[in-house]
Image (cartoon, rainbow, N blue to C red; front, side):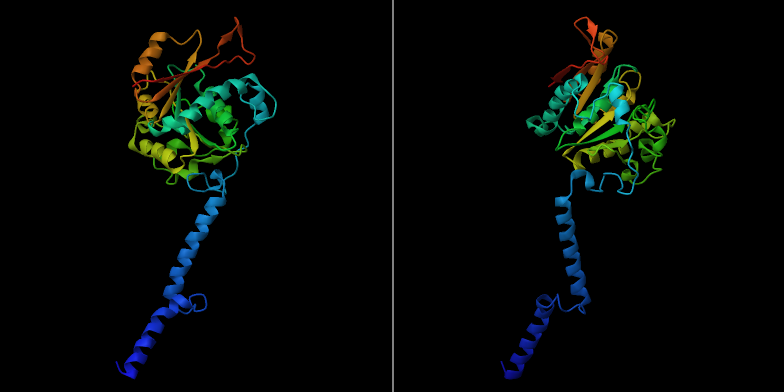
Length: 314
């Protein structure tokens, strides 16, 4: 190779190496600069994600600019719900025992063989047996955990009551039905932040003549799948319609890995309870919460008692 050829070869090599060696001091190379900026941006996002708490992420977490729903915690406390204060209450102790089993199922060894274990459906055989009360209490109790977050979904679209019970009925504008009806494109628009740091809420939304059909739709199934997969460290609690008389409730319930059936003592009929259970997927973890239980022939201090029985039918 001649001296000239060697020089040209050396110059060509230098040119090809220059953008890499001098990318910080050569902004005129627009293509290389753009690529470097993209990599840097991705690294920044990843680093930022690692430092954020689970509910500070804006994906599937409600938009950061949304107004925080101010739950009347003191009033809920007085009405017999789980207290978020430091005082000890019987209902707190009762719910602690129930949630511990649910959390073990969701994140323990069973979760490896139980699909959607962190998605929990709460239902009953008939209306009025206390399922919404139980769903709210479970959500409040799990929100007390230091390393767990919870999303409460009011999926009882026929007779929604959670927004009213939480005192936020007039503060929410859209909810689950608007999303299922394609009136809301982004699920984050129906996820509301609350003044309980680890608690998020999806209201039922407006009623529709297609309410029950939408609960059994593919879009609802896809949404449930998003709940489970996008945040595997989050517990999702869905308050669903009663199991009897509404065929679509069974479809909704079976989307969850765990199903809680609320039973009202001295009220729920054994035959109806058996009928409800027979409709459910036998590979699910099925639990029972006894509501308004009597203790020592007298009502418990808050009019509610709980018992949890785990039955995985395989």
